[in-house]
Image 1 (cartoon, rainbow, N blue to C red):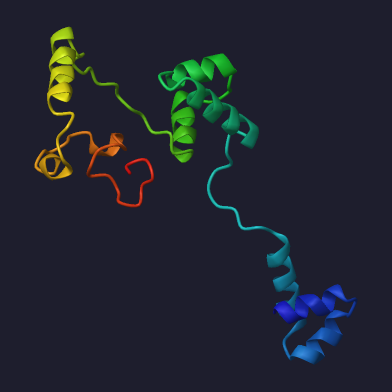
Image 2 (image 1 turned 180 degrees about the vertical axis):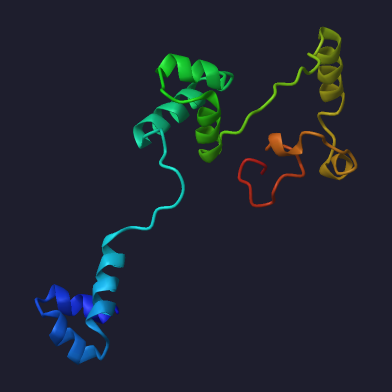
Length: 151
């Protein structure tokens, strides 16, 4: 069928293409109609590409903003569910902030004291210690061997 479309594009008639390929003119006609009309399924979107970009831009700028606030501030003619759907399509899923205990002065002092006491430890001794924040500390002795910061 692809070949027949090329021939029609070159100015050949349906009858000429029919003889060259060996299929009916109706089949060629159907192929041209199918090629001209893009396949669309489902309901037409209420938001435009520009609206979608504005929604994601606002969500990235203010991560704690709700979908209702985004809808109201951008004056969008869609529901908050649609706004949430667009955010999910942009891989901006909902997050619930968790409260974590803050470090007290006593904790900071104990960490500092530990660091001062063990500053001259060799790498072999540090290997026996389990770090909870290994990935965040590029200076730890267990970092990737190819890392230039760790050497």
